Image (cartoon, rainbow over all chains, first blue to last red; front, side, top):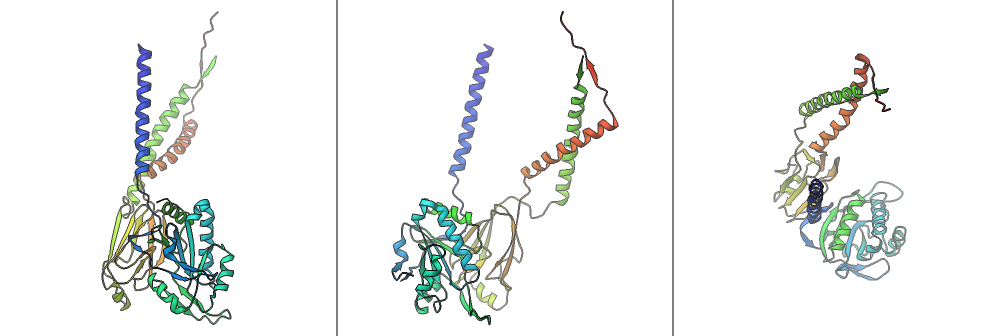
Length: 203
Length: 172
């Protein structure tokens, strides 16, 4: 009789523990994902980018639907921000593994006078040859800069290396439906961007 | 004959209880005394950038509705509503016109960011770790056993225990 009671208590306790664990697990899974970048609400339709890439092929942002696009603005003579950002994007692409097929990395110049397609190609090859590099005439690029609220201004430092360009350093994340969803300020954590991109790919 | 350790165990238990009570008193006292006024539960902090803010900042005036100093706790959600006609950057949050920028502050740190609607163009964000019940409990779990060990050794030096010997009955 006593043994029966013990067994009932044991089974009942186990079942109760199981129910509690299930409830806790369900709660954790049901919680919506919290993006780690700066979320834009409502998401804005990403403005079209139509220009020749570093290989001379026509690139259209609208043709990237179905892929998550990470977009950055910079220039090949950039001493600090751009190499750091591109190295971070390379790491993110590597960490994505097979999921990288569902992502596109785009770098648009803010220094069209010096960044020819050939120069952009050589520069991007140092990071990842699959990265898309956009250059062109200033008049072609200005509407893109405006649409993405990109600040860019040449500054003469008196250096033999020439002028530098002060520019917006944020990374833009465009979802698979072509909406501008998130931005990341310079030096955002790589793991944070990676987690968000993974989530955008799985959406 | 076997050595009876019961007096040591009793002493250890008593000392542990006393040490825990002392640790609770010291920890909680220090917590109440030094409590940060910004320490609170994480929540949503909403800021509105009014229309014309960029123009006012360009004229050197501070943007209304934006506090000069901002302190947050980990887990806070910073929500910036941009009612202006131009984009704005509030620290790590970039907000195109007519949208809301939202950021979950996940790390405790002191950030210095550019800010488009601060006259000096810079903004300091202070994100602190909240002192939760778990934090205080962790502190207690570290301090109580340490204090107990110290008190136990100290008590043995002040009031030594004489080891008792237990008689073991041996059945013939």
